[in-house]
Image: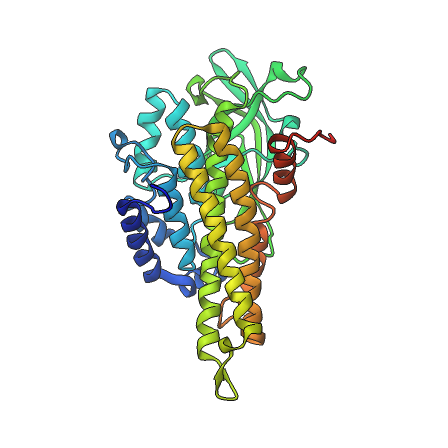
Length: 388
């Protein structure tokens, strides 16, 4: 980005991805979701076109771009009603961490498959008793000769059924005594490894992407399953979580744009007493407010991506949290407004907006809740004391 204008390359990328998303579209996406099917065709085509690997270094077959480019891809697909949730996890978190901290062998093994979309890798940090309070993580890895042996349980893990492997956040066994301090150890765990089980969590959300509980029972891994250092503190974890927040914000903004476009189209075409309902300020003003909210969130998201891509991890952390907060609120506002503009039609299957109500609401909870973002800003930006 230069100033408030994206580069010509980024704008061209957005246009191309938008065209791809339009060919599939929201109706196709919802039909797949309602039938319990996956959005595999779109993922595979986006991968072959290089869109899923824009942030992977060129030497490994990627586009050599950055997180801002990948975020643009996520936003434009979502803006056509067919957002790919695993983009938030697989290329954004996992590929980024491996690029920054993986060994040469790990990069050679995994990055080319991230680049062409032939690999999906899930990410597992949340546990039943360790959500935002990640220092309470109990998934442990113990040494057994040259191997690692993992035990633990993870919840709300997206897309395990589609993933070849999961990047698991645990802790080395000897860290149990360090109460309140998480020094995460990151492991790449094949989903077909002995001792790995996963079970779907029934959700009231219409989506091709499912959530799972993941069980790790004496899962034996080779030494090279460890990514980076077993004692790297939080640095390498947040190398992935900041992009996750940026991607989540872009995903939410795209969803909001999709809903807003449908609301605007309906407000232009629906007539009452020979007048389009969009002529009435009671309809027009909420749509305008939704547009403003989405644009403000997008600017902060672009700032967060620019800071991250410039290597300012601390600045990116603050901006990424703010962007994710703003995008979640803006997407909920846009979806709610679009539903209201449609009246009863807003909750019919024909118009496809009702399914977005629950989906948009997730943006306020995951991958980090609005309350934890407010805590972050209060403590780290404003310097206020902690209550915990």
